[in-house]
Amino acid sequence: MPEPTAADPPLERYRSYLLLLARMQLDARPQRKIDTSDIVQQTLLEAHTRRPAFSGDDPGFCAWLRQALVNNLRDALRAWRRGKRDAARECSLDAAVDESSARLANWLAADHTSPSGKAARNEDLLRLADALEELPQPQREAVVLHHLQGWTLAEVAAHLERSDAAVAGLLHRGLKSLRERLNRGD
Image (cartoon, rainbow, N blue to C red; front, top):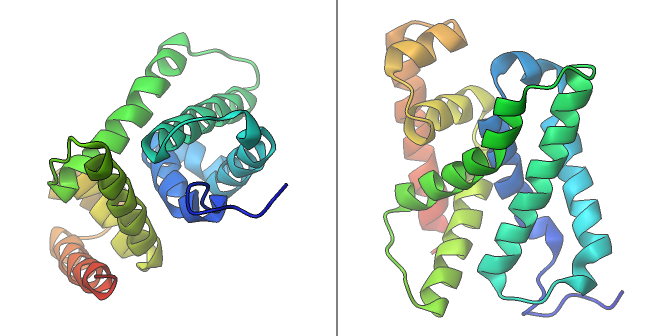
C-alpha cells in the first residue's frame, strides 16, 4: 500500500481518539477483562486493510472508524459474556459511541458547519484525545467520567474509591494539564 498522503493521513493519528471512545463505552467490570488497546489495534488493522475501499472526507473517515470500533466492541462484549446476548446493549452501542463522539465535540464548544470547519473540529477531537491520553490514568479517568460522561463528583469519587476532595484535585490538575497540552499544540 502506498504511503498516506495529506488526504489520506496515517491511521496512528486516530489511536488516542478511538481509545477514548472505547473506554467511554465499557463499564468498569468489562473494562477489567477487555483490553481497549487490543480492540483499537484490531480496528486500526481492519481499517488499514479496508482503507482502499473507503472514499470520502476526514469526518466521513472518522465515522467509518467509529463504526468499525463499535463492531469490535460488540465482538469483545459477546466474547466476554460467553455467548450471552444483551440485545439492548448491542443496539445502543452504535448510538452510545456516536453520543460519546458528539459529547467530545460539544466539550470543545466549536460550531463548525462548513466542510473545512468539520475537518478542523475533527482535528481538534484528535488533539483532545491525544492530550487526554498523555494525562496520568487517575486524572484522565476523572476528567472523562466527570466532564465527558456527566458523572457527578460523588459518583466519580465512589468509582475511583477516593474522597470527593481527592477527585476534585484530580479534576483540577487534569484540566490544568489538559489546557497546557492543548495550548502547546496551537
